[in-house]
Length: 222
Image 1 (tube, rainbow, N blue to C red):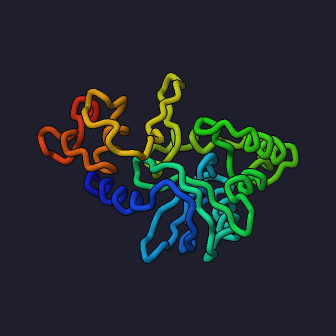
Image 2: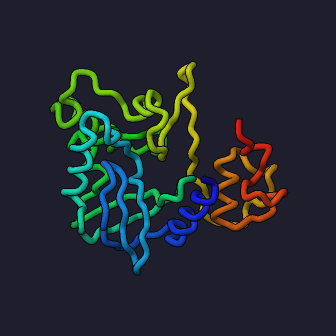
């Protein structure tokens, strides 16, 4: 699994933090797509939102909505970071429309303010809820991160996990994409951060025993 993670990171990380255009070739769910750029496939996680999982109510509708917006289209991507799963995290727009915001406005995704401070998303979610659009047609819709807590086998992503004491745990951080700032395990705040610099910056010193896993003190299996 660790080698697959490293491979995914290598693929996605070739696209640096920048604005570029690419063609959407696959819509995976309501907040994840795959694009083709210069012959390279890159998985994109839409920033600032969290769509229902496929098995959740409105999971299919959320995917269909995103497919309608970007499927097989040339889009503009404003990349912001890379998550620990090797996915580029960013904003997508098509013909001037902010797709991330549009998914929330349609009621096809929750705003995900843990990773942003843009009040626009909260206002759009409030508007969608009041208008009972999309998932807000439900009496008491379940947030995707809560659903994933009850279904731990669901696919991981840029989302929160929850402990039994309801304390929010954030397993994925967004890191400064400039290499050279951190080189030692003592500088890492988490296993996720260590893995990021290990795969992104090829900091081999983080893997002292050469087993493919950086910073064993942080990343040893529980």
